[in-house]
Image (cartoon, rainbow, N blue to C red):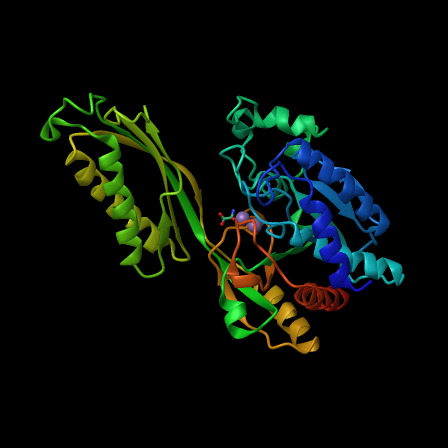
Length: 407
Ligand code: HGY
Ligand code: MN
Ligand code: MN
């Protein structure tokens, strides 16, 4: 069985652990998460790893630690967006696992100790928190989020405990940076660059900064038939101006992307003038100054556009992650491995967020991107080829076998 073949078979099996419906939906602390952990634990043990479920719901597989060697953390997130794909996150767990299985089968030892991690939650699809598992390892976990609730009122803490995680242990999970060789994540590109260059893999230079705002617009409900048009305070009409303003600002600002991804209307009735709208605004840029300037411009725009409809509004900045650079040393190791495997190295930036945004707070990080079909992601049709999975696995295998830890 080739590495690529094993990765695709495991990916297919992992994708079965999903809520019913299109694509893959596997959220933090769900029955699907718990069922996946049972499979992962078995595969990790087959690869000679000792396994542990930590207090943040991360499944950790460790090679037998050799004294005097630093530890390289490898991993990605097990969770998905709702109705997402089978490779976002999971590829970064299963591909290194297949490589470790291969190395175990050949009775090889690596120059570094390895911790392979299935992080519990990166997307934040169930609770508003994101990077739950990786922030615990980086020492930046905010305990307040344990009280965050999902749509049914279940807390993050009880969701973790339903997995068997001892959340009291979270404060002890921060890794000692002096013992680390760094963090390495394999991830699908989720974009079209590698496909356009006809390359199976690429080296990531930096990960974008992200901020998310929740906006509530208050108008006034009224009879849709009897209220004269010029007397209406239509919250949804104001919200349409907000959606357009976000798009126009991002279209006209270099190095900035953004979206209004969520929008809920109250009372959402066919014959009632909308009295309220709750929406989210997300801005991303690799340049902090661009994102912060855009935020100021946007808030001024919202004030004008919403007031023009005689509506009021309030907003909260609910999430902000500064952009991070990938370690030049790890980038170089990946470049060398790609060249040794006969491919042309290419460096690119990540417009998607990853667990590396958290891990970079306490260790050097590196990422290897794998080409994905049509650059599609966060979609049921997300796909990679077995040949690319195999190529990326050979690159990771070469990189691990030749890992150098700067003195
Ligand atoms: O939103 C992101 O970029 C990531 O998929 N969580
Ligand atoms: Mn994602
Ligand atoms: Mn991801």
